[in-house]
Image 1 (cartoon, rainbow, N blue to C red):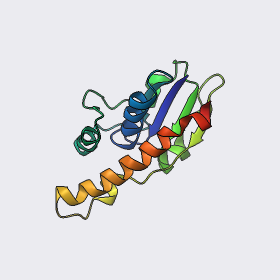
Image 2: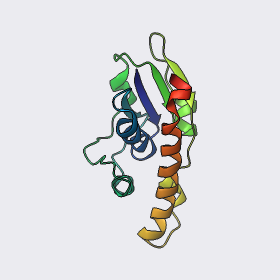
Image 3: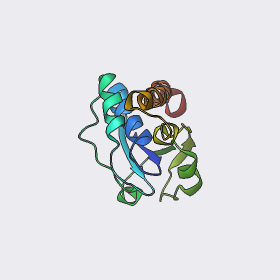
Image 4: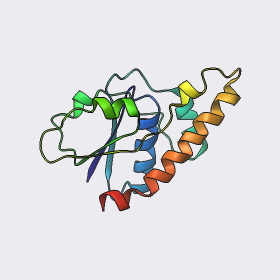
Amino acid sequence: MRILFLCTGNSCRSQMAEGWARHTWGDRYTAFSAGSAPHGLDPLAVRVMAEAGVDISGHRSKSVTEFFDSSIDLVITVCDKARGTCPVFPGDVDTIHAGFEDPPALAREDQSEEEALIFYRRVRDGIKAFVEGLPKFVG
């Protein structure tokens, strides 16, 4: 099964989800991530994933259009904006939504990187819990 995690920027949440899916279910699912308006990999997302033992430093921010000709089985939107703008994929592609808060937006007012990392870790852990439960959604 080929799963595409989709958010707006493909910088944080979808990258974390792809990383967790590859780490947890790499022998069962093929995971990808993309964004409707990609704008680069968030270094704090890379950092908190590394803290949890998952290396996403080699990931790159990708546009959802890169996957239009791919045989994707399931699209999982991980932000509300992406849910509202999720394109229709050709073929028999299921879509589900699992919304997570945006760590950069949550951390915008914080005075230090350490304070910002609290939000990134909370979202990372929520995404991990969701990804661990993927089999109940996709079999």
